[in-house]
Length: 172
Image (cartoon, rainbow, N blue to C red; front, top):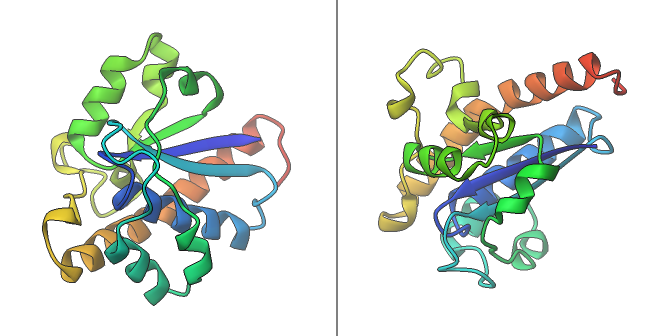
């Protein structure tokens, strides 16, 4: 089983949107039985709370069910999760540096990537410019933009994981 966690600040906007988008993409790619995606925040500020209603609305606008988004609850990233996650996808540069700083080993540090590093249109940007701004401070157009940036990265993540599973002798 290949495990991915998406991480933002409070785990109520960007990282749950990425979690839902990636889970759907892996299911559609026939990898749903081989890959698990969850999400967390670098802080506990929102732990136990539901997804921001605007993030849920954005997902629902793209075909995710209200029931799916309603059961989501935010959680804080735990350091011990490095051990059982293969890929840690940060939503912005601050999350990226914080997660890499928290990693106890070089192997764990190397698991941390910015999600947009998988988007061909941004992969050549300096790492500091590959983040997705927090839509929480804005309006629905900011959630639309965040969703679009996440979606642009999804095919690259799926291919990366497909290649990792193949090189590890996994199925597909």
